[in-house]
Image (cartoon, rainbow, N blue to C red; front, side, top):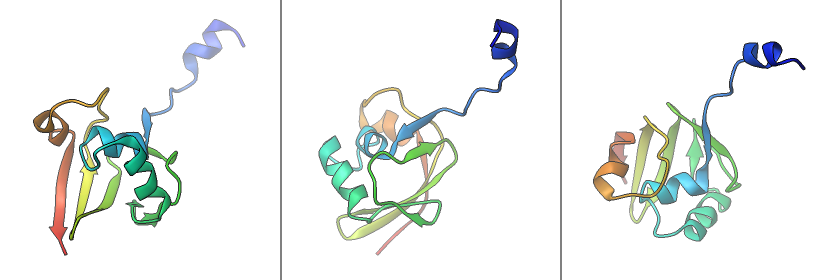
Length: 100
């Protein structure tokens, strides 16, 4: 493939593993807990049940996440580059619904 052909191929939209994203956004205390949450099938991505920690999440995807006795439905606005403070993490998603 020439360099011109490589320049013309569209870049895939950025994506992140769901376990890493759940940890970065402070839905779990660590990445192992995030992986287990995803593997047990408790998390939904765009309405589909997730059973693997390596499933890719993209910007504008909708996640359904249980947390304690509540269930959060959020839309991903930005994929964070690293785990940071809670306020910055919360700016990366929009809460669509919270309830039991």
